[in-house]
Amino acid sequence: MKILLVNKFHYLKGGSEKYYFELANLLREKGHQIAFFSMKNKKNVETGEKEYFVNEIDLNTGSKLKALDVIYSKENKKKMIEALEDFKPDIVHVNNFQRQLSESIIEAVNERKIPVIYTAHDVQAICPAITMLDRDKEICELCKNGKYLNCIKKKCIKDSSLKSILGAIEGKYYRIKKVYNKKIAYIITPSKFYRQKLIEDGIKANKIEAIHNYIDVNQYNLQTDDQGYALYIGRLSKEKGILNLIEAFSNLKNEKLYIAGDGPERERIENIIKDRHLEKNILLLGYLNQDQVKEYLRKARFVVVPSIWYENCPYSILETQAIGKPVIGTNIAGIPELVQDKVNGLTYQYDDIKELEEKMKILFENRSLAEEYGKRAKEIATKEYSKEKYYSKIVEIYEKAIKEV
View 1 (tube, rainbow, N blue to C red):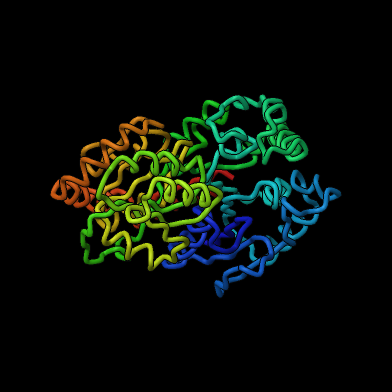
View 2: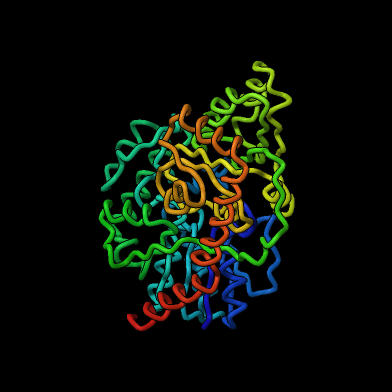
C-alpha cells in the first residue's frame, strides 16, 4: 500500500509530529511505501523518502495579505495535486493540516477519489482556538456546534481580534463544506474522550474510531532505579497544570521534584522557587532530548501529569508506563483512560491542589506501592499500546476506506 502522510510540521515539534514520524516508521517496517507532505522549514527531518513541501506560513509573522490562505490556499492545492500525480497514493493520512496547509489539500485528494484518513490530535474541528481553552487558559466549550462568535467576543486566539475572526471564519467554512463529515473518510481520535466531543459537535459517530497512540515498548526495556524524586515532563504553561503542581509540592518537605521542559511560565516558577526557598527541593532541568528523558524516567519514583485542560493521549504517560513507572494524573479527558486509579497509578480530582498533594505524599512514603503500580503500568502498556495492535487497527481502517471509495 502507498500512503501519503501529511502534517504541517516536518520536524519534532510536539505530539502530532512524534506520531507522524512513528507511524511512518511502523508502516515502512510492515512493507508499505511512504511519502510525506508538509511545509518547508530549516528544521525539517531528512527521511530518505519522497517528500513534498509547500512554502511555510508563519501565523505569527505572516503577511496580512495572505490571511485568507489559512482557510483555502490555491498554491497548496496545486502542490498537493503534483504530489498525488507523482506518488499515486492509495491513502492520504492527514494529521495537523488546518491553517498552514488548509482545506484545499483535502479538496485536491477528494477530486482524485483517494480516501482521506485524519488523526485528530486536537479539537480544532470544534474550537477555533484549537485547545478548548479561552485566552485565560480556562476550559471553554462555548463554540460547540458552530457558535464561533464566542471566539471573536473573547478574543480566544492569542488575545487577537484579527486572529480570532480568521479562526471563526475558518471554522464556519469547514462546517459549511462539511469537511469532517463528508470530505474525510474516517477520523481517528487517540482518546475516547475526544471521540465523544466530536460526536457532541455533530460529526457522525460511525466515522470516528478511538485508538490510543502506540508505544514501542522494546525501546523502554531499561533497568529501572528509584532515586525517590517526582518528575514532570512537558511544557511549562498554565493549562498543563504546572503551577498547581508547584503549589501542591510546596507543602511536602524533604522531597524532590524534577521538572523537564520549558515554556511561558518558567520565569514565574523560578520566582516561586526562590520566594519559598525551594531551591534544594525543585530542580528545573530545561529541555531534554529523548535519551535524557528516558534516564530521568528510569530513576524517578513517579511522574505527575497535572493538566487542567482536555489532554488527548499524552506520550509522556505512555513512555512512563512503558518504562515501568506509575503516573499521578488528573481525572480529566483522556488521562483516566490511561491511568487507572490504584491500578497503574493514581488519579485525582481535576484542579484539586490539596488532593494532588495527598496523592504525591502516598507514593513518596510508599516505595513498594509505587513499584507495584509501575509493574502493572508496564504490563498494561505492553498489552494495550503495542505497535502490533495499533498496526492491525490502522490497516483495517485503511482497507475499509479504500473499499468504500
